[in-house]
Image (spheres, rainbow, N blue to C red):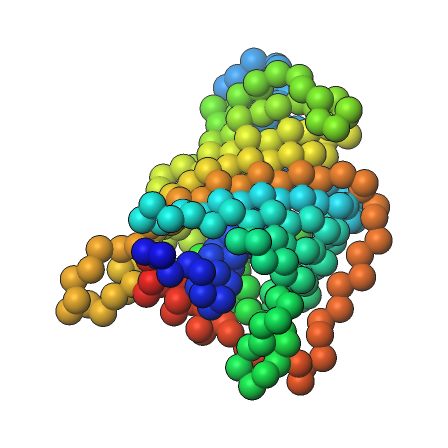
Length: 286
């Protein structure tokens, strides 16, 4: 394939990008002060903005949930679609999932911001059954810092970037029989921590669509974006290559709040650290 996404290293790199951006968007709904009106809008709009700003905290209060996530990553006319399902710790970010991509079934865990994957019949370096990717390191190397990994202490920064002009109520819809309110949200990336670097990668705004249930919790979140890797990550300065672009579409759904999550890291001796390899693959190959 033109983008060589079929190799395990590059596939892992694509999933890392998805995990990083998915966590960013989820945290982007957060807020620690839901009682304030943002001013400048009518009562209904202010109420909607308060609901959106409170969504991450309200969802995290449930502690855990079942989650499905469908992600399509495309570049240069080639695309990978992955479907994941499992359980997630909404407050801490740990998860246990099964991901199906390119007819391959991958066992996946996230524990303490490290992504672990195991694919049947494949082994990492040294014959180890699991590969490990440090998501925090991946985010930092992509110039995004570590603020997007659902740390509740950091959600206030995102809330401040969401104002009345950024929130539009679309209407009422049912998801799996549950009544929800559908909102369209546009976040000014410049207002986020590390916003200048993030603008270079995802543009001036982060558009999202979210569906909140009667308790203000996320039931569905959807976003599409183009992620541009910095030129320094895709080529040496003297090569003059244009930055790589990945288009990504993600839909996440949450249900069965309070579901049990048993996320444990595999034994260290069974894990091959592929963080640097995945980042090189994601940056150097298109």
